Image: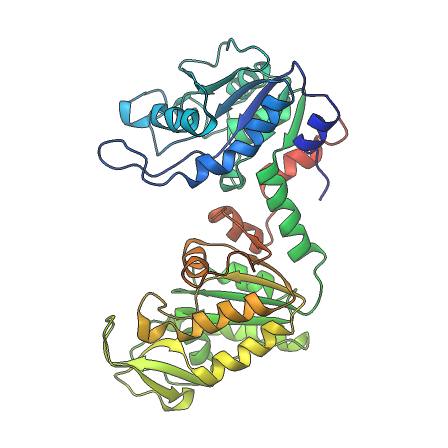
Amino acid sequence: MNFIRFQDLCQQGRAKNQRVFIRADLNVPQNDAGHITEDTRIRASLPCIQMALDAGAAVMVTSHLGRPTEGEMKPQDSLAPVAQRMGQLLGRDVPLVANWTDGVSVAPGQLVMLENVRVNKGEKKNSEALARKMAALCDIFVHDAFGTAHRAEASTYGIAQYAPIACAGPLLAAEMDAIGKALQNPKRPLVAIVAGSKVSTKLTILQSLAKNVDQLIVGGGIANTFMLAEGLKIGKSLAEPDLVQEAKAVIQAMKQRGAAVPIPLDVVTAKEFKADAKSEIKAASAVADDDLILDIGPQTARQLAEQLKAAGTIVWNGPVGVFEFAPFEGGTREIARAIAQSGAFSIAGGGDTLAAIAKYGIDKQVGYISTGGGAFLEVLEGKTLPAFEILAQRVGD
């Protein structure tokens, strides 16, 4: 994927004395008292900001926070706690600027934070007037917020249209590189793991991947629907019987390409959905009417692990069982360890997937961990994200 990298501009000396506008993702969780409870996103934004400062730029950084009403600035919507925390991490004062769309005073070597971008009228609808105002504030626009890359808003898309230079910051560039490596020109075999509670939320992803992957591993409630499609009984397990035909179509699409959707050979069941429920390993063909399938069985896990270890590229979205409950974590743990041991390039994304990676301590063994959530899922669907599209268009400028 072709785009301008902010890192290259800095190395070429093109950011010196320039006004740099960084769109970061600083949407951090806070408690009722307004204190930040987890600052990963602030920490992740620092390399881009420090890169700009080191290059001698006049630096502005902004983000959305929460879901404010456009045109109404409320205390809980303020980036003040974020500016304070960023200042602590950088060891410098980070002034917060309100009502900034008509002009910002910032000198080379300085850093200011612009108040919550979503308070500006026209932000979400990508108002051209607002986008042009933002673009007029800078010489270089840097998009470094992959979590917003699937949204065409004034601060993520419009400004990139009108700024003199529009480029990708290090976080966004890393996401774009990893996605390109995993999906555009992957080393084969390409294995995708798509798991979750519902086929309906990931049907378009399954359909898109079925055209490209060599193995499509399904898990969770999605796997139960695929078991129904293969004529297996699933008891009272979570599934979507009305989507059985769609599941059959995905299986058929894979077969026509000489690829496969492995159906569980064995499963772990319980009579109730509880952390301390009595678990039982059963053949996939022996599920009772009052059983809940809460994990894949050890035989299935071993088979999938062997496929993953032989893969060239792995895309992982979703745990294959209720891994939060100890009796039903075996499948996800086996999958995680197989990915860690595989020589494949792996890319993983989604909140539950990140939680599983953290639980099993394999973050250093996964090739790339995407922080994008909805943006990551849209990429798996085969969509071109608005941020990628506009940055690609600006390459020749």
